[in-house]
Amino acid sequence: METERGLLVTTQASQVIESIDHFHHQILAGGKEPHFILEAVKKHPDNLLLQVYAASFYLYGQTNPATVRAKEHLFHAEKSLYSANLREKLAYQAAKAWMRLDYEGALTLLSALTTIYPRDTLAAKFAEWLYYCTGQAYNSHHYLAFCERIAPYNQDESHFIAMHSFAAELSGHLSEAQRLAEKALSLETITPWAHHTLAHIYLNTNNLAKGIAVLETFRVSWKDISPLLRGHNSWHLALFYLALRQAEKVMAIYPSVFGYAPEVITEQIDALSLLWRLDMAGFPQLNQLKIIASYLDENPYTHYIGFNTIHYIYCLARLGHEVEAQKAILSIEKYARILPKGYSRKLWHDVVLPLCKGIYAFVTNDFQTACDFMTPCISRRTEIGGSDAQSEILAQIYLLCLLQTNKKKAAKEYFNLHLRHYKGTPLAAFWFA
Image 1 (cartoon, one colour):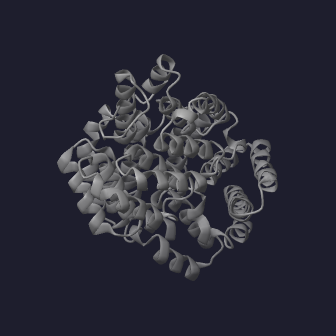
Image 2 (cartoon, rainbow, N blue to C red):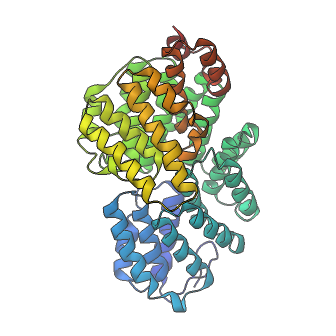
Image 3 (cartoon, one colour):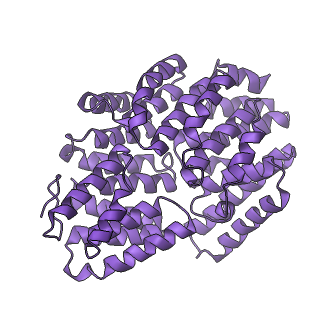
């Protein structure tokens, strides 16, 4: 049988097709019901794709318990491999690589899958997440090439066009990104990932008034989407007010960023990122940090992506949780040692670890040590995960390191190279005051 997008599935059950189509739309559109896949797989446990998609649902969680659940679903999926078609086999192998944290391997498989089956935009959406894990800004041109290759086959899907627009923005093609975002919105106004692209464009072009006006208009529609995506788009809106140092407006948005699912890592990271930026803008929020810290569990000691890790180090250090912060840093050292020789090992040892040590030193007011740790690796900040707007937090803290150590000329040069979109803002005036 075929899905809505004309993709063959090894099944004779129309309910399986309906569940796959529903999950596809929920993931691409940022819907509220992706978890329905878990009920579907209970009813049809012998369907490989339902098992793979249930595993993928858990893999987004980036926690060890969630990974265990994903592994169970992939174990069941494996039983159906013999009778599966090629697309299903590739989806299974990609999810298995994702589970092993072999992000590059998973991306290679998803690239192959979508080359053969370009209408599989759910596979493309999984790839978008994996580019996030490996640094969307760092991998922007690969991400854009991925989207461009399958774009001719998917002009009917606003949510894919929004993905394409975001890839264009990350690659610096802002006019094209804007055109694509607006095209997506012309097909479907509630295309929140297109709203997201516009947020990136307006921030990176120092168009704060436009960014606020547009996102405040779209904000009403976010009640109809996933709370996690609503939170992330709200985070973007808050960045515009933060650039104006309007802390009260930022904190008025904050409940949309954190509180719906405080145990979920992506929600924690958005909240920590916003509070960290407020701190660097002169508005510390220790009480809010304490609330987040109560939900961290083992997250500071797990190593799914370095981008998560730096936020947990900041949180623990800022709250004065010395033992926990040092335990987290030690866990990075141990993790880097057990990784096989190669890129990932060097990334964690040569980039993530010194960045974390630098963040810890900065928070404890040892600015020279912070500078010493961060200077050799700050140019690789986009490799540890996140988008351009997200990894910018490291550019901000490094700028403050330079200013705190009286390296004013270097600070000005760094600002002009990496943070110039804040030129003339109250935030920049505060940094250089």
